[in-house]
Amino acid sequence: MTRRGQSVVALALAGVALFALLPLVVGPYALGIGLGLLMWIALAESWAMFSGLSGYISLGHAVFYGVGAYATVLLWQVVPLWLAIPLSGVAAGLLAVCLGWPCLRVRGAYFVILTLGVSEVVKYIVIRTEAALGRQGRLLIGTPSLTILFEAMLVLAVVSMIVLYMVRSSKLGAGLLAIREDEVAAEAVGVNATALKLLAFTLSALIPGMVGGLMILRSTYFEPLQAFSPTTSFTIVTIAILGGTDEVPGPLLGAVLLVLMSELLWARAPEVYMIILGVLLVAFVLFLPEGLLGRAQRLRGPAKS
Amino acid sequence: MDLSVILSGQLLASVLVLASLYALVAIGLNLVYGTMRLLNVAHGELVMLGGYVAYWGFAQWGISPLISALFAMAVAAAAGALIYIAVIRRLFRSRFQARVEANSLLVFFGISIIVQNVTALAFTANNRGYSYLDDVIAIGDARIAANRLAALAVASVACFACALFFRFARSGMAMRAIIQHREAAALVGIDVDRINLQVFALGFALAALAGALISMTQTISPFMGFPFTVSGFVIIILGGLGNLPGSIFGATILAAVEVYGVTLISPSFRSILVYGVFIAALVLRPQGLLGRPIKAR
Image (cartoon, rainbow over all chains, first blue to last red; front, top):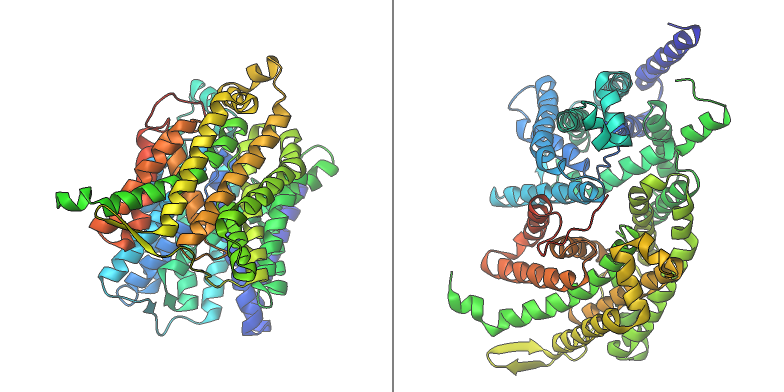
């Protein structure tokens, strides 16, 4: 490991340790913000692992978050939580296999619209199911404390970053990048595009499923329209675009910016917050399509990855 | 299933009304996609704006929505031209040519969020409605509100006018030429940039017209646009991306599925049905039911 690599790892470890100790120093309000930040980091890093690397933009990652939340709610007081949360991730992964099989056969614009479409279908199916069961939202009583949820979310955020880092430097990552550049050519040189895409899509659903499970324990109230809200998907994409998509620090940076902004604005003026989100999205795509991180690297000279 | 239900004039009339409105929405969406390969997910927001113009015209000054629809179209056409000049040209010039399709989606999504929330700030997020021409007319065994009949008539005339425009007008033919082959169209001397500008103006105006008509038949809100965007996409995928007559065909199919599905099963199935048609069409026949594939790159 180079000296520079060592210092990056040391810095990262220090950052994680600092975050882990946060519950000891700050109050519940700040901790809630921290939880939100870690949630967006975990979601955006997972998204970047699939969409950033493969170029298949998923506008449906909210479905994995929602299904994870639903699974946790269904498993609530059936199995212990340390088992329920990973099972929620597995549920999201299984759903990704089922959805990925048809969706990943189409590419480009079709894929984007299709992911949005299927996530909405799943949402309405859950709504129908809940209605048929005669449930009008479900309340969870006796959920774990904010501190425990925060620490668990920290683990997910860190794992999501490690996964993105490892996938990027693996054969899977190389295959995905080849698919992004030219899928036909990639297949011609022996990349099994179908299998790689499905594997990456499934992998990128696991953590959002667990994040959904944790967040429903935080809100303690399950309502499908909220849990499956497409706003979640859109926010993930915006974060990734803000930061610059396919390297670990990109989504991290984007999430910090977004959470800062939403803290300043959301509570006071949700419409203004959404308008600024929209303006940022348009401005970044038009003027800074490589994201903040990409621009920073370009200014610093040739990339040293 | 009762055959008399399926054949009842009542349902057929509902299908026709819905289909004509959907066709207006879808033709605009398809034009923009066909000529420029841009995914306008903000298309539904134009429908919403058209609805608001008609609403305010009627509520404030008592202007007939059928007249303020013209005003709505002009406003939307100007907005379309502005967006093309300020945003889309820049997008085409960007260093990331290969990602224009994905980037256009993100840009339009941003625009759609902006328009929705500006409208919500300006006019509150409440549902709004008005009654205009709401006496019921009986035709055969169908009983239909006069405003729905008016919407059907205006939308059909507009679709017919579009068909004539694409068939006979110079710019209409140029648009079809660009849909078929952009480079070849440019080679034979078509000013692609100018036609693109016209496509934006025309597509947006059609959406606003649909919105003004829709506001006569149902309540409007700042967030009503998205379902129309989705329906529009389902229709152009059914009819074929870039295939204009296909849009009218797709609109009829989707309207029929929606009206009969809601009547025979339950209103809460509407969304599942629409998205179900969507997914089935995309997976089974991504080139559209009518065939004649247009390469989506």
